[in-house]
Image 1 (cartoon, one colour):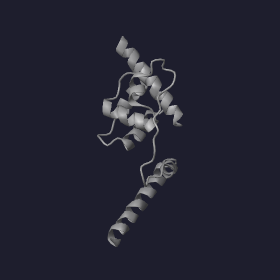
Image 2 (cartoon, rainbow, N blue to C red; image 1 turned 90 degrees about the vertical axis):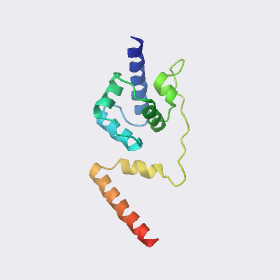
Image 3 (cartoon, rainbow, N blue to C red; image 1 turned 30 degrees about the vertical axis):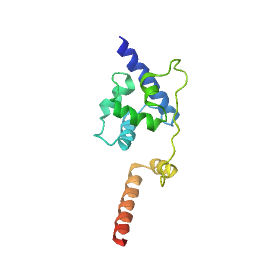
Image 4 (cartoon, helix red, strand yellow; image 1 turned 60 degrees about the vertical axis):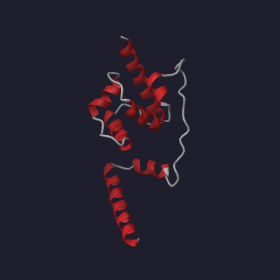
Length: 133
């Protein structure tokens, strides 16, 4: 019974955090796609993500860390909540040198077909940069 309550509480925190970053959390496919873009391991399945959102399962610790970093909360808060569970413990995320998150957000807002055009353009530019060296 306790583990069921813990999974349901995690699911609420996950959905709340998704809403804070502009995603209503209603699309397991979108969550899986966005998570898999950030996770260096094997991609998670749509079924696994659906279980996270429904409170049927908890992600493994490595996946929890990626979710928390993306959502701007601590892994501990996302997994266990706070003592009063009223306010998440946000972490400050600064862009690494040379990373433009606004550009990444602009590209993410494009359609999948448009993003493929951008990827193709980047590949061409990278090939040209390698030849210029």
